[in-house]
Image 1 (spheres, rainbow, N blue to C red):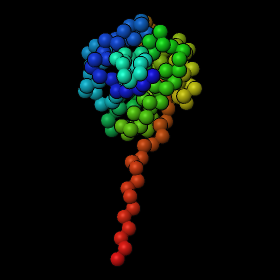
Image 2: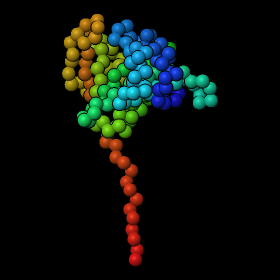
Image 3: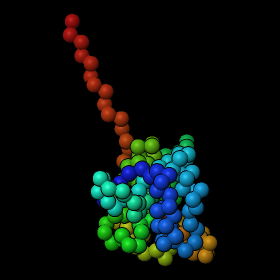
Image 4: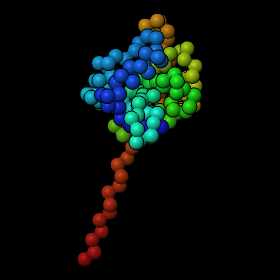
Amino acid sequence: MGIRRAEPADIPALLAIEEQSFATDRMTRRNFRYAILKAKGVVLVADGGPPDVARQAVAYGVVAVHAGTGFARLTSFAVAPSHRGRGIARRLLPALEGAATAMGATALRLEVRADNAAAIALYTAAGYRRFAVYPAYYEDDMAALRLEKALAPSYPPPRPLLIRWW
């Protein structure tokens, strides 16, 4: 499995994962296109094949960075049902956190359905903590738990020390 930036060619696979994963509140083709090409953030995909063959996305995550703040937001995250239980989400989530850190974020926030026990367990194990609840957040009136994780700061590599000997 590889993790890479999403490309517009990935959109049909991302839409299929979205359709299989969420009954409501789905991202659209337009949402994915904007996130991949224009948004301040990143869309990463996990693909299921070796680098020398055509690789199709089997999981994705979308991170948006809020300008002027230290916060990034995981706006959507899903693994194709046929690939769940293989640890893909546990590998993709740190990559998304690293991308957020590289863009200057010091914390990553997200909303998760209150009835999504698997996702809540994943986020809790990864160090996220609940800081709020949004009642009736989703289209079907399900509540959302708001979770947050502090991210390790990303420091630029140190500049070489220049020593002059006269």
